[in-house]
Amino acid sequence: MTDDTAAPRHETGSDETGATWHEDQPIDERGSNRSQRPGSAAFLEFVTSGWAPRPPSQVTRGAAADFTAARRSALSAMFRGRRLVVPAGTFKVRSNDTDYRFRPHSAFAHLTGLGVEQEPDAVLVLHPVADGAGDDGSSHHAVLYMRPLAGRDTSEFFSDSRYGEFWVGARPTLEDLETLTGIATAHLDDLRDAVAKDVGEGGVQVLVVPDVDPGVEAVIEEIRRQEAERESRTDRDEHLVEALSELRLVKDAYEVEQMRLAVATTIEGFEKVVRALPAAQAHARGERVVEGTFVGHARQEGNAVGYETIAASGEHATTLHWIDNDGQVRAGELLLLDAGVEVDSLYTADITRTLPVDGTFTDVQRRVYQAVLDAADAAFAAAVPGARFRDVHAAAMEVIAARLDEWGLLPVTAAESLLPDNQHHRRWMVHGTSHHLGIDVHDCAQARAELYLDGVLEPGMVFTIEPGLYFKSDDLRVPEEYRGIGVRIEDDVLITQDGNENLSAALPREPDAVEAWMAGLLGR
Image (cartoon, rainbow, N blue to C red; front, side):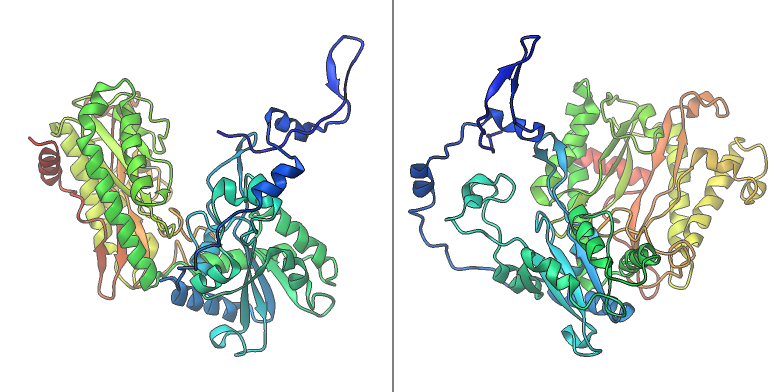
């Protein structure tokens, strides 16, 4: 990686031990000691001149713009008279002076339509106006505050490793983002004064999404010192977070389209993994071959993976979130692959298939797999408009408890195990059957329980159905033939007007179909 900072010069000396030291160099500047970037006047004049004019902008209004406008209007109706501040977030340090790839906060992306690496440090503000006088007849006027493209005659152009065009490419202009998003734009330097306007005793209240951008939160806290009422600020911010999460419970047409794209791209990744299984078996860390195959596909065809890929072979499949992925992939064992592609809009799929490494289930593997599949099918049957979200899990658990009872693994009957005070069957499936899915893999996580767990299913909701059974190798409560087997089957479901649609149905689920699909991909 190239150097990105200029090395300051400081006087040096030594102490009584003979150790050398810089007289006045702060410790946070010492990473720049490696740099040899020029800083002469001749260089500055030369590097900032002689550039061709920028080509005309090709930016057009984004496909999400009309939908994000409707989302902002819905939010506006919940918070009349209040100023809403939704930061995109900042770069996060990975190690020393290198950053993770930037991903905007999900609420910011949902309200603006900006994904991938747009726009670090940006802040969306919904300014309150008279009812009906705002954007699209709402009660707010939205402004996107951002750091625009710097001129080539500025030091940022060639010296700023986070934002400079020489380092990271040209940033969009204010005009570009206004065209793309349909949101008015302003320079980030204007943020503080704009947020502070009319704040004070009896004036506008400011709400901010917390824990996203510490710099923005510090500005808001400074502004809030003008308010008479201080004790309710945290509650107000939490209400905003809650509303932003609940706004995503029902997906609009654009979101459903993006979910379909994410699922289709994920299925292609599963196909590539199956083709890579011979290479995985030949490698000492075959799970890494599986993971690398899928992650490479996600970067080629989308933005990234939507979460850390679980590539769990053999006993590792009994660890619910196995992401070390450093084990062998052996014939005769099962591979549990839980993976999802996050497309450029940041919507992600979340699919799991449990595959026989050599293409054929053993009898006991098939028995466990079929029990999980039957539980999933029961959950699908329960996932209809008017049912409650918790009913989906309950339907799957009835099947799981019944099968474990049939196999003699429960100390009580299936009916007794299902009682709230018992739940013995949950020893082998401790997780829930479903979670909402969308721009976050665990979407809508801050929604109120009465709208999530106890919520009534509506057309447009998207969530997973993912029962499983996990028999650890040291579990003395199960026969030896079950030990070391972990099975999960996960699909992404869309609630429709008259039932549901399995968005991931193109990826085989039935054991015979899985074997035939694998044989075709492996050329057998």
